[in-house]
Length: 431
Image 1 (cartoon, rainbow, N blue to C red):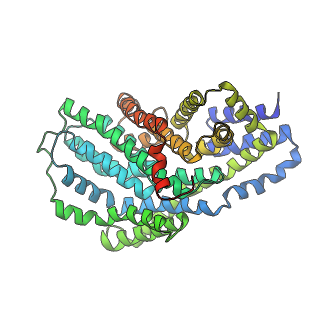
Image 2 (tube, one colour; image 1 turned 180 degrees about the horizontal axis):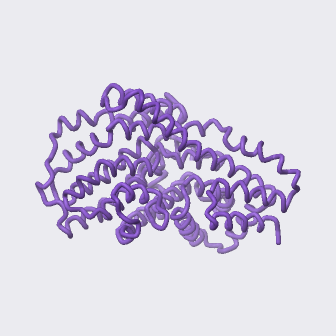
Image 3 (cartoon, rainbow, N blue to C red; image 1 turned 90 degrees about the horizontal axis):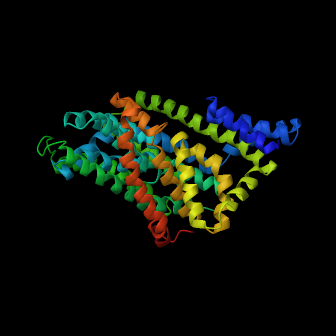
């Protein structure tokens, strides 16, 4: 049996056995080194793990994770909910529409779907339950809406994509993800509103409408955060990594002195939480470096890419097959693991068919977003069902509805690449 097959079988076996993804990547990479190179080459493990994380753009990931935690604790979600309620007003499905809109705005601060889902679920689920929405529906809607955080900048997943795919401008990726993210959110609004109308959830006048002026004034700090981040990037005032630092500083100012719901002790606790989450992410990236180095040296990724290209000469058909494969992977793994495992295989395929790397990155992100609320794993859905105190299997039917809605948005971006590429082209970024 060939060494690269040994490595792939070891990786699959470790995952099936329940070994965490990070250790599965590292151990299977070591198996490939021993089987195909030389046991003495295990001395490169330390160098490979260090080289994987010793990249300046990666600094942005723990900082944006911290930003999301700070805004979650600073009471920003509750203020956004009040403002969205004031805008939409009392109507059938009003709270469902509010949940989608607030998730999209929060996604422009945290860049993380699970963090977005947790913040909005804590605020929205009690009021949606009182208004007559079934808990499984509410949990699924919030999980699906929070998945747009992977598209709407700043996105942690797009930051990693810009690192693993050489020559891709992160600013172009951020700009390209904005409109597809809004399109995905709009696609979720349609079934949310229709189901609410059909089932008579939240009768008009059942939920009080907050004063528009007061709620807008309270929401200004939250609404200004995406403007600050994206405006600074567009103006060239700071780089994406520096934007993460600015976002953290702004979140601290908002929490400590504007909303005053964040104390110095809370801030210290949030630093610890962000360190733990970032440590998990960086561990995956570090140990994936062993897997990537072994796969490159053995020619595993080249062989797999050649096999994928050989499946069909039809680029469109192959693109559909890749999207389905990424969707399945998104149901089982987190976005960071998917990028690290699949991109060494997909980059040669992308180059062979001449697909635009920015457009292709957005398509992958949209597929992974769908996977974040599609059982059996569904990381976003696991968060919201825990908050709602419902079983994951109760949400399957609702999840399929929202999967179909977001798949329509994905289909539009596949058919019309300009939906993703027009904004970065307009802003003059390198495509």
